[in-house]
Every structure is written in C-alpha cells, then in structure tokens.
Image 1: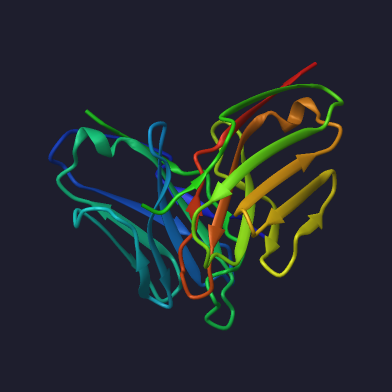
Image 2: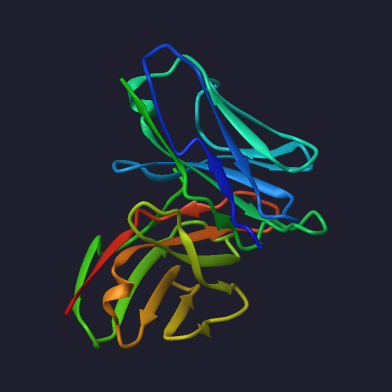
Amino acid sequence: KAGVTQTPRYLIKTRGQQVTLSCSPISGHRSVSWYQQTPGQGLQFLFEYFSETQRNKGNFPGRFSGRQFSNSRSEMNVSTLELGDSALYLCASSRMASGGAGRETQYFGPGTRLLVL
Amino acid sequence: GESVGLHLPTLSVQEGDNSIINCAYSNSASDYFIWYKQESGKGPQFIIDIRSNMDKRQGQRVTVLLNKTVKHLSLQIAATQPGDSAVYFCAETYTGGFKTIFGAGTRLFVKA
C-alpha cells in the first residue's frame, strides 16, 4: 500500500506570494491533518479534515487555509507569505473509518520544505 | 498554551545500552498517547501508542509507560542500535479533539 504523498517536496517563494501544497493520503484513509515544523516551534498543528469538513484548527492566522476533496486528497494554501512561514509542512492521514474519535494512528508523508525569501 | 514537553532535549547512549526518553503532558483530558521517530529528511514515523486505560505497553524493543497521576510518559528502547539515532516526539490527543499535540522532541545519539 502506498504511503502518504506530498507535492511538491521543495519550494522556494518570495514574500507576499502565495503557495498551495498538496497531500494524497493512504488509500482508504479519510482523515488528513496538516502540521508546520520549524526548529524553533517544533511540530505545530494546523488543521484536520474529515469528509471534506474541517473539524479542528490550530492557532495560525487566516493566511493559512486548507480544504479536502471528495477523494480525501487535501490541499493547504498560504497567502501573503512571510519569512517566518519557511518550514517543513507535514501531512498525516488516518483511517477514521467510522468518523473516528480523534484517536487513531496517523501516518505522515515526507513533507514539503518551503523556503520564503 | 497547550503543550507536551520533554525533559531532555538531547540524549547520547552507547550502542547496546537501553535508552529512556521522557515526556510530560499538560492536558488531563488526553486519553491517547503516541511516540514518533523522525529521521533526517523524513516525516515522523509511528513507533508505539498507549491509551489512558493502560499504564504500560510493549512493542518490539520498545516499551511505553504512562503515569497519569503525574502526567508523564516515557519511551524505553532496549539494546539501542545506531539505526535508532533520530528525533523522538511524544504526542497526545483526546477523544473528539481531532488534533494531536506534539512535544518538542528529543534527539537520540547512539555511539558505536
């Protein structure tokens, strides 16, 4: 079974631009979560989606948004990029077969490394 | 704010020794805890988990201990190998939370 895939793997943008990152979960997984990882802040939760609905959101500004499609694939968007948005963005999927209780094991992709200049 | 913290940011052990990585969590409502391993250039990889109705769970060479009284979690790695060198994260979540809170991470160095 293929793992979680994320595209692109590396990205360089300049301040003020916007970026869209993509995540394809493991086949059969319906929950997708996004995290930002930086050396200073560690792994920070961005948001979680299940059946195209955002069920929870972390403490990030409105410039960070996401969505999930009917095939469970997910995208996240960051608008008006700032230097501090440089990070590794990780996507994780879990089965949540019956809607779940938020306690299922997550499987992570390799991440998209974003550099903002 | 919400946090799951670690007592030791860096741990260096000799190959063959046992390793113990500790973690303190802050949310009393958390009922599911996970340890992840992250190698350079990769996403976190699931190692072992434990639910709050347990205080110990064993896997292959790894054991997780949970002390809910003091909100403490630990990961024990037996006979540590060079391939165990990585950053280890503890994480917590709770029923209906739909989000996972990660600790800061501990870097484990295994000396050959």
